[in-house]
Length: 196
Image (cartoon, rainbow, N blue to C red; front, side):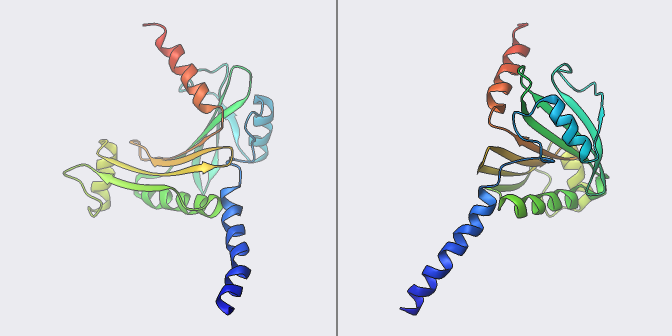
């Protein structure tokens, strides 16, 4: 009877703890999905980011780029919008020194785990001849050559998806994707393919 009573008392607390992370909307810098460019600029600037131009933006009339600092690293943030001026995705690049990329990646995953719960997947895959047990400089070489995949994925979050990876440029990339991103991605892909 005591065990049943303890279970009945603890269960709501455990479920509430799970709910607090799983039910938290996916957001970066408090910018809500479907925010306009004007609202996104205001929120990003309030968080200390400065709007910049970027030649990497495929749709400069729609999308925005910002520079700032995150976790003591220089950061570049891209905000992607639909043609109706609604925020669909935010991509964050932490521009870490090569020697710090693996530690920075782990810190980002740990911070996001505190906010959203553990990732559904957390992978570190190396193609031969590289392996996870290699010295750091060899793992850096593997990543630069495209011989590794280090990423974490959160699925089933409220209002979006979230994933983190180490890029070939040895930066930590964090992708916040809102509910409209899949259709916006498909629209952009169709637009890019129409020249064929």
